[in-house]
Length: 311
Image (tube, rainbow, N blue to C red; front, side):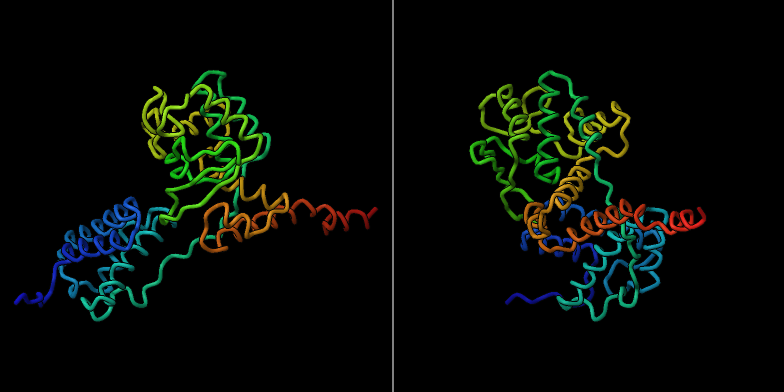
């Protein structure tokens, strides 16, 4: 008869079990990898301070020491490192490996409510004009138009294959969305024109929709130091045009903000972007409303009222 192990298990063993659980539950491999990296960093921090690597040995003091080790990083990064380790300890409690989490009563940093800064129309026109009338430039223009017109995440765009495009219905089949959710994205005639021009050069060979510079292989979404990285391509165009912060997610912000400006419902934007809740869309709406209020400021400016009264 096989007996279950009793007594303290090492954190390293439980991390492996936790990551296996994440895979079994269907989390994306890149997500599981990120969790593993963060938890490995936490484990290393314990070792640096001589804390036994067993679950019952970790105290609230150890948690604060870990959190303090990256206090120089951005709030977004700090928030993620906190959240990912806390989720691990919450699971330890739920699974019966620990009676209480050392994260109890420890608060995460508060993230600021950021104002979304979409591209202006002139910015997009400048970026499109910066693409040379050559095969690579035609491809880059098609990529930017697709990002702008669909709001796809860069990882979703990079995973598109040729057979995911329906030019007749003007639809893209997104099979590798965040959280393993699939959806359909629409594009317009304006985007279709650039896609058709690119596809005429690409040919009808099965495989990635957007091919690497040499015509073979898939463009990678995050390869900053590789010529076949989408982010590198956008950054290069940003330098060429002198525009700051040219990145794929800004096209996603622009899609949402312009859509709301043209009267799209929050639900429309939520479904097209692939969000599971309206919370993120409300951030776009909030930023749009703030911009609209700023535009109307001249109509009710107290200083202008005072100036008019003085006259």
